[in-house]
Every structure is written in C-alpha cells, then in structure tokens.
Image (cartoon, rainbow, N blue to C red; front, side, top):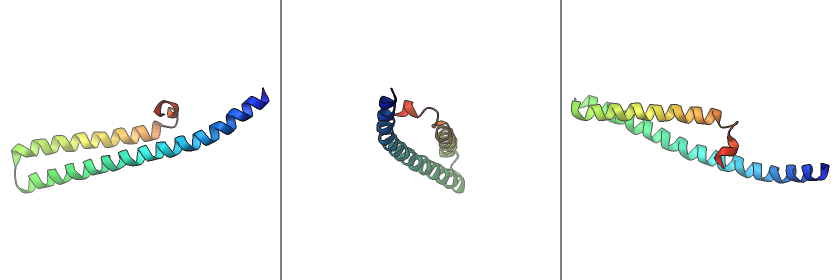
Length: 89
C-alpha cells in the first residue's frame, strides 16, 4: 500500500503543477476580460454624461452595473477556487 500511495503522490505532483498553471492562465484571461469590461463601461458612463445623452446613458449605467457585478463574481470565484479546484479541470 505504501508503494501505490507514493506513486500516486508523485504523479499528482506533476498533474497538480499543470493544473495550477492552467488555473492561473484561466484566471489571468478572465481578469483581462473583466478589467476591459470595467474600463469600457466606465468610459461609456463618462461619455454619455459629458454629452448629456440620456437615452444611451441608461444603457451605459446598466453596462457599468453588470460589469461591476462580473468583477465581484470574479473575485468571489478567485477566492473560493482553492476548495473546488477539482471541479475546474
């Protein structure tokens, strides 16, 4: 039994490193999308406010709220990912 436990532990180490690398890559890509959405939504709110465009301002505010919600969900996913790491890959 000890031999099989050691073998599975050594195999899990290499797989674990790959899994952490892929998880980091996924987190980095999603962070880039989240930050881009926040940047665009903030710029739309400022633009519509500057030009007093009320009709498009409602869309900009809705987009900003949804982008903020996505950012909060990303933070929650990032902080809670340690326990459910097996579910990701």
